Amino acid sequence: MASQLKILQTPSFKKSVKKLHKNQKADLDKAVKALMLDPLLGEQKKGDLSFMRVYKFKMVKQLTLLGYSFEDGALVLELMTLGAHENFYRDAKKLF
Image (cartoon, rainbow, N blue to C red):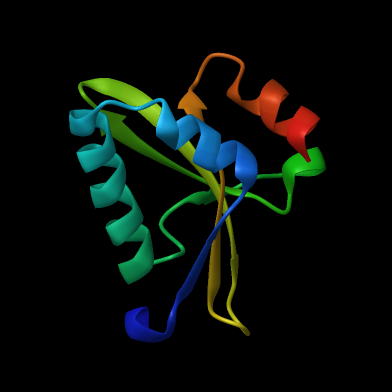
């Protein structure tokens, strides 16, 4: 399944990744690889953000949230947003 999985990135996600340091990008890559192996790792959100799943992981000893969506029929993993817990959900609502 992982070999056929297509990964998309939103422009806001790409912008967030550009600002990361090399060691932070390494932690993000590990998180994305974990999601590629099991896209249902993240928690499904409710309400306004019901289209999104959130995967929590440590990036340089700081809790980081990765917002994404997964379409099983098309095998598409769309990386939407990245950030610390503070204001993560408020900012995610503004983006989508």
